[in-house]
Amino acid sequence: MVERNPEPTLGELFADLSRETTTLVRQEVELAKVELSAKASRVGKDVAFIGAGAAVAYAGFLAILAALIIVLANVLPWWIAALIVGIVVAGVGGFLVNKGIAELQRQNMAPQATIETVKDTAQWAKEQTQ
Image (cartoon, rainbow, N blue to C red; front, side, top):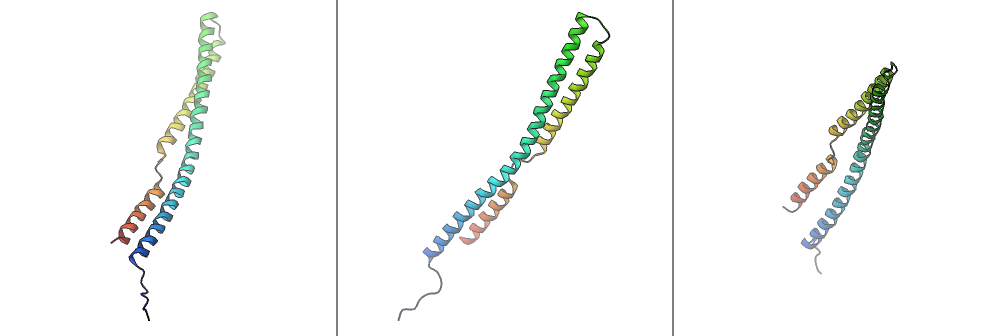
């Protein structure tokens, strides 16, 4: 009668290691996709603030230009109202642009959870081959 060795062979161990490594890599890629998708949606919101701020600032710039044209063409008191409106609109636009830029600068776009799990996976694989 042939005795069967209950411990797996070296080939079986490497096959298991290969399957588990492949599974881990797939899971890491999926985690990276999810994490980057979430960060991209936050960046999209911040970019929208920048776009809205730029549009409002442009409207303010046009109002200031209109006020300057009015001043040059007709020196009348109502130009002051157009100038005040232009300055206020431009200030709001500047605020929105600065808010969007500040939020973008605070974002860390590196997929932190993926980086940590890749480190853990590398450590695990290193331990398995020792």
